[in-house]
Image 1 (tube, rainbow, N blue to C red):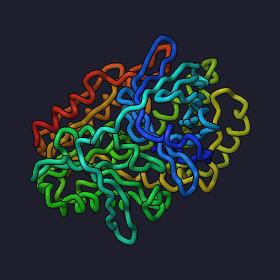
Image 2 (cartoon, rainbow, N blue to C red):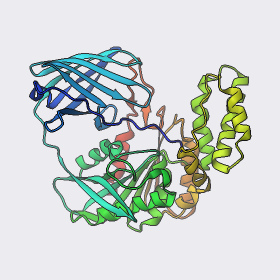
Image 3 (cartoon, rainbow, N blue to C red):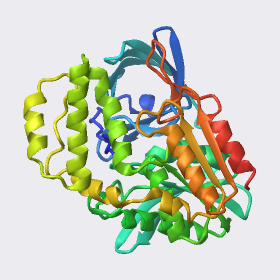
Image 4 (cartoon, one colour):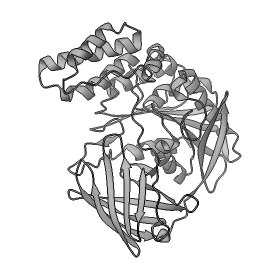
Length: 428
């Protein structure tokens, strides 16, 4: 699996004392750009001890909740700057406080726009949130339990991690959607991320599976949760490893494999990297060179081929517009790739006897959607599992979003969330 860049890192700038009460609190409003508007909520808090601000935002359209801004600054009484660094771009919000409104300009490489917020009273969430810790061998994992306010013998879902340094925030939006509908959810920081100990960069696939199984066991000790109705949700790498987690825990009642790879892992890696570099190739010869380079990189990383030819190709092709340098020697990519080369996803899926939902975007550029769905479903059914549902969303990408319009803001596949929730409702 490729290792994506983390979405954001929390780093809040200092602010003066004056005006603290004016910025702190809950806000609702819109971001607008290129004739498109998106509803967004904002929460800002001032730390009297450090003199710093922290702010997070949520947007249903982006399917995100509790995402922290990298920097928040209040200058004087009224001038506010908020910075949000993402995988590909940095958005800068420069605005001014006027009584109970906050308005200003949104600056981003994909296009400039405006934002406007109005202060609102904080709403009581329809579910409880509680920090929890649990052990996985010598590692202590930290997470958040989202628990509906009413009901007993509740169904529950453990969210497994995607690749890279993924914290609990990555699954919070979907976990909240479940909690709003009477399904408990446990989201946690990957080992070595956030408040969890250990180091995911040194973890084996068995370690990661053990972490998921430990999360299932932790949920099973909650008095209001039915230990017979705890399932898994894994996206991308998490979906690919979900059957291994299910095999490690006899308490798993269902599995949701979201963009789970069903082809050999080296083939999936080739598919993913080539889709990212081919758009930069300007000719058939350039495409052939890109193909040769990527195939050599994967052969070295996944199968231990000597690096001489890879280094030679890197030197010869480094000025091509599609080119990217091999990861540095200490990058976790070189540690994980040989392990994934040995991982046989279909063999683990064939051991899964509980209901399975497989979800894909038809235009996924990181995982071959139709082939993966067909191969995993066939492995399950040939092993006697007849409760297999496949949902493939037209025009949707790896994260079930449709191509963005002029604003650059995506739109979710219309049936993605409802399809997932409907499937869960039938198994409650």
